[in-house]
Length: 422
Image 1 (cartoon, rainbow, N blue to C red):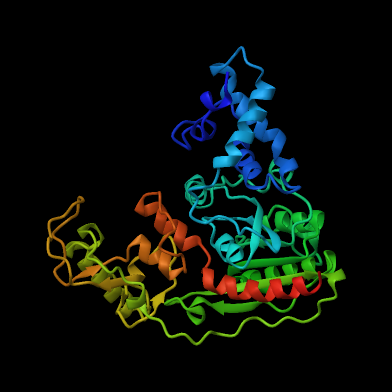
Image 2: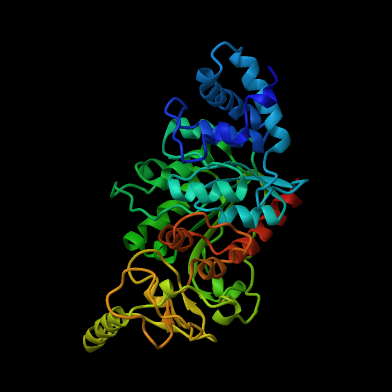
């Protein structure tokens, strides 16, 4: 029996989220794709056993009389020839450094780091829809919950940079010195735990700017204390970076935290300066008219207008906002008024017949939501980035992502620093 006659890439992936393979382990798809992505590196040994197990689980019922060990090994070797040929964002051919992608989302960090010559050797993300988007763009299924020891066990040794856009959480133990043990029960603890075990040469963390004042400043003080004193990294003061300053028309402020392992002897760091590139919404606006489904109904528009008036009377600044073509967008976020704070004028619509169930009629003022592709561009994602999910999932994913250009320019400085120490 020839292996090429009995297995295909699609079989091993189990039709990729359309068919759930009950017998496959939870880490099967992740280990399988990570093995194929890293088969030429030492990291592949971390993934190979689980990858083979995953393939055997798929084949054992279909080919019960076969030698599954040899069959699975042969299958992996065959698939290496065809793997990733259709991935829009392949790794660089001759990478100059390695990194891991924690809380990976849809791969904003990964695009930036790969563009600079990096190879990703591990990724993790718990959201299933985000994992789907990640896979179709990078040919890799991220591992799941990073708080689980089974997930941490797949992280290889000897990678250069740890990247993480971790959630902001309060630390539960009050009155302590704010050290490593005080962070237990938070996702930062798991990031710190991985740093402690793997000792990457550099770390690059991203968070909302509110982390600086979170829990009356205790959160950021604890984070810096752990990184500097408990883990022994040189960590300059965190910096608020605005995506608007790096070539995308979005007023998005985020805190960047970078660090370098103490033995490297790095004791200075300057965050990148703004690029002074003037951009506005018209630079990323859809070139062709968009579907009527993105246009607000007159009923909903009136609701937004009345809502804003009520808050204005109370002295509040809440409410919808319309971004003109020469304006810069507000920060895109998922939930709340995320989309309504970034409405736009677009009078190109000709057919006002609704394609979705709405109350009232489509407004005649040309007011619509931005499209998911426009949100992608606001974050610096190229148009070749595939959006395989529903609009609602796409808005959530791009709203939660990082702004790639700001990440890339900061990472460039980090990489230059560590490569000088090679």
